[in-house]
Structure formats: structure tokens, C-alpha cells
Image (cartoon, rainbow, N blue to C red; front, top):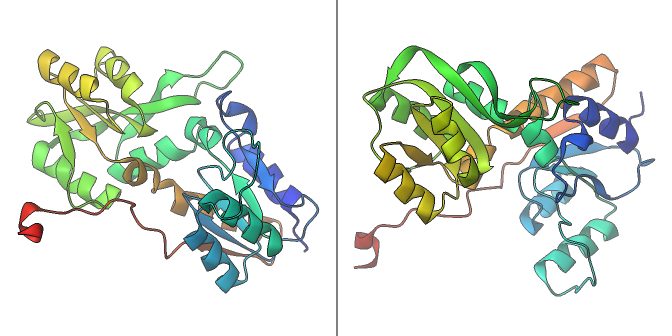
Length: 275
């Protein structure tokens, strides 16, 4: 059966309704034709030239990224800037680009659930629930439990594996045992106090503000900065699996690729490397 961009959008809207996106966000089809036939799909977190070149090499005419390629309203497209080069190349090669950003973060089976499940948390609930019009399972962040509780070394082992990191920054002291954990994939400093108030033993997020880290020190709470990339990348294999399920259910002949070229934008460097 022929699958079109509008069919993919309809399925994504069922999984992570675009209406769940924050008011400042930009999600959905950001470049392309809703009537276009989908040849194959490539998934990645960031809409960059490396990902676009990977799609072209694969013959994939559709990119689904977490972060939007057009975030702020455009007043110009400068084609010697990274963003302008990206858009010009995508349009030239007729690559459709879809963003699932904060709608996927807030969805009942989205970014934060994927991270929580990768860590082995159960009994999940939103850290900051959505509005009354939304289901009880939607909202920002997640809080859950480890059953049985984890020791600090066991938790760190899971974190290094799930986040695919070599080093992890910690503010405060990790408890000897962790039963309740709160998390928010991506930038989530503003939910740290909520996590503590809800009884979390530890809070995992990214881009933790200096003042938030000092607050954690002073009130005896523990915050882990798992980096923006590290805390969000677990959702991409999950999304790949869901699209493959839709393809099977709808008899779509469709390849769904997960990027093999995208890497963490930061590398770990030690003093001895420069001496």
C-alpha cells in the first residue's frame, strides 16, 4: 500500500498529539508535501547537514527529527548559513521534514517514558501533569520507582548504559539507595524543586543551571545532569519501533532507519590530553 506524508502525520498525531506541544514550540510537517509518497524514513534527534546527507545516501525522502529545523519565525533564509544550507538542500532533494518535539516529550508514551523504561523505572506518572483536557498520563517529566531499590553503584551503571555517556555530572550526594527517581529528558532545571517535593530520591535531567545545582547542594538533594543528547536519544529507537508497527499493521512497504552518523555534540577531554 502506498504511504504518504499525511498518513505518517496522522499516526504520529495518535502517538504524540501535536496539540500537546508547548505554545512556543514548532512541530509537525515543517518542510515538504503532505501528499508526497514516502520512500523511506530516517530518524534522528537533530536536523543537521550530517543527518540530511545520511538520508540522501539512504534514498530516504523523509526525516523525522526531535528538534525542529525551523524554530523561530523566519525573516530570511541565508543559504551560506548552516540553517539556510540545510533548508535549501532539503528542498532541492525533496526531503520532507517532520518534527516531534515537546509533543513527544509530553506524550503518554514519549521521550520521558522511553528514558524511564531504559533505566528500569516502574509505576510511572508525569512529574508535572498535563491540563485537565489531557489524559492523566501526559505531562512534563516522569517519576517512578525502582523495585527493588538500587544501590548508588547500580544506578550509575544503568545511567552510563542508558545515556551512552563516559562521564556524568552530579550535584549533591547520591543516596546509598534509590527507590524513587524523577526525570525530565532535555532541559529541565525548572522541575528540580517539583521532583524533591514529590518525594524523589534523585532527579535526572540536563542543562542544569548553576543556581539549581547549588540549591541541590544546600538542601541535601541530588541532581544528575545526563546531557540533552543523552537524556533524549533513548526515544528514537522507541519511535522507530512504533513506526515499523504501523507499517506492518497498514501493509506499508516502508523502511525506517535510525541514524548511524549522529553523535553526542560534546566529547570528553581530560587535562592530560593537552599536556
